[in-house]
Length: 325
Image (cartoon, rainbow, N blue to C red; front, side):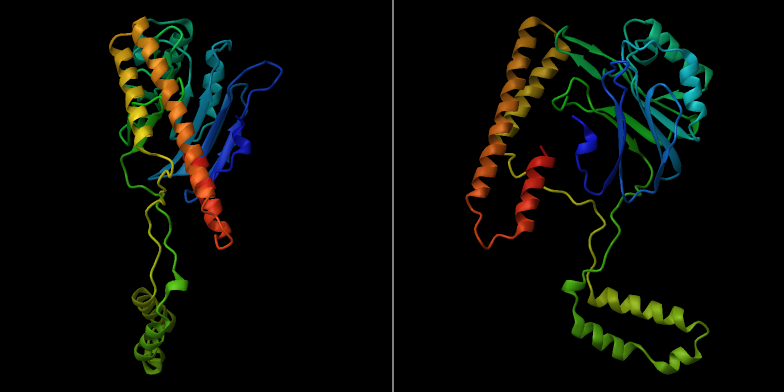
């Protein structure tokens, strides 16, 4: 799927794809909330990488990388890449390397090269030896996705792996900022729901020309009073991120996902052929159940649309069914 064609409302997308000449699959993307100060970093590298400078609790460079298994990687390419990244930075992605340093049972050439790169540049790795990849064909778990950072950031984040594959063969990796979150939505005045009679009355009773005339800074006094009046007469929007319920998610979906996740946990404990077969059946059932729930939810909603239904309501429903699937 080409993410350049997918709209992410309230987010800015950055993408880089491999060229067609080298027949490299994959690609990398970074998607950042518009409320976060950000700027793309221009990189000169033969690797599939994209980097963005964002301001969280401190300015941080986030670099996403994909190293295909077939790529002939050398240490100089990685060294040249990090030399272009403003510090401090986080480098994360699918490295396709095996090394005991991050939990693999064996060390391969790619893994040894990446380990040398981490040591030589005095970097830190967040991985806690949890597997990040599941190969259904071989019924094996691997540690392919790495999260590496400058030393100054190592104590600022907590790293974990999601317990659900989410219809992929890679587990989502979660890097959580332990500091204050900067991405709360900015508050806005709800002017359409303002109590204007109260606003007018407070303005009449609160503003005094004499007070403004003798004030050292009349504009500051005026602004302070106006903000206080507005806070009493006009409501504000919430700072919390807006969340939507999945209109199609019913008890059947919940049960099917539980059965799929239970089958996956069983494979982790005992990767036998029977357990693998059970997982494939549970995964297929979950996909089928979710597709049917979405279809039924949409059909039910469409049957209720009439001439009085607003276009906003229709598009909100479409977005909730599409984006939250």
